[in-house]
Length: 194
Image (tube, rainbow, N blue to C red; front, side, top):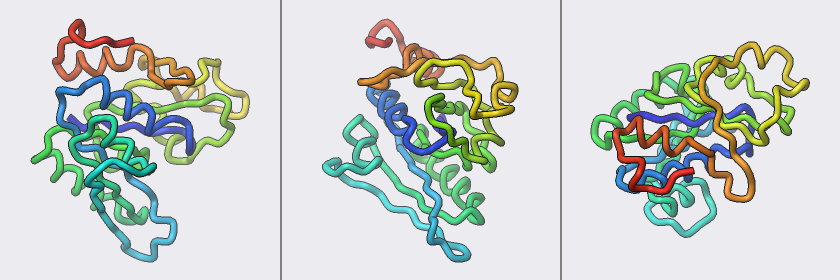
């Protein structure tokens, strides 16, 4: 399975969503991948690094602490997203279950599940999220408000996919873990899910 978590802006809960899924599916051996734009990229920059142990405060550390078997950080220029998709396909052929933090990868790779985090208190809306919001298989919403007036034209682009509400302080998306476990063919009743 390739599961992608994107968001409309920075710092709206993508990593928290991924960590919730990792904790909620402990019997799955996930490879967690964060894809970042290499803002200083010149030309064809492309770099992959693997975090081997939890212990810091990076997203990769959080993935490992939440139960990921492997945690990778892929930094790439926009011009190399096809290479990023190829790298993920290779990983999927050996690691089987990938959970990826990115929006842009959905333009070059069709995941089995694409979730989009929306925080209606944050005005910014990335162009990549604007282009891809109608492709989402589910929306993780925090706080659960109707569409913001600061996002003209967005409400019409959201499809009828499920909406999972996420609240502080735990930021655990209600119902999402149950649905992910069901999609993976895992028993829901043996694991506490909200």
